[in-house]
Length: 117
Image (cartoon, rainbow, N blue to C red; front, side, top):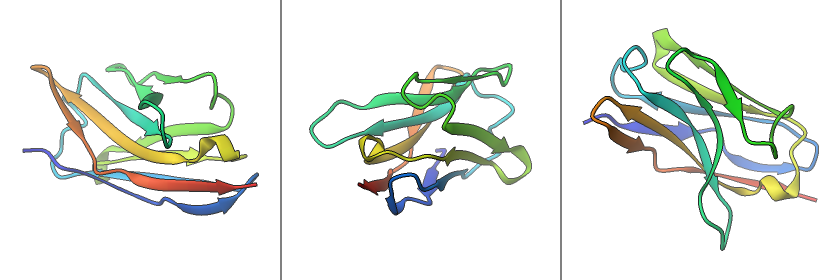
């Protein structure tokens, strides 16, 4: 059973930065179908933020393009989301997600990001 653990959330002022981390319990970054970040704001549905394809190309939601950067450290089984120029509308619980062949989906427990104006 793969476990994903996010960290790095917190309270930041608008214009600030945070880096989220997602550590996987196993060395799975070589065999994934997709992996990325999602977020869920209060009262809203969970939405996709950014992701890697199997070829490691990156994709971003229009709302974060140019401000957020997804990256990974395969040796550390860790995926990151660098968030710059944060806005109050970025306030949400952020989840990392991993899809392995099957397909089987895994989610972390989430880390809360609050951006004050």
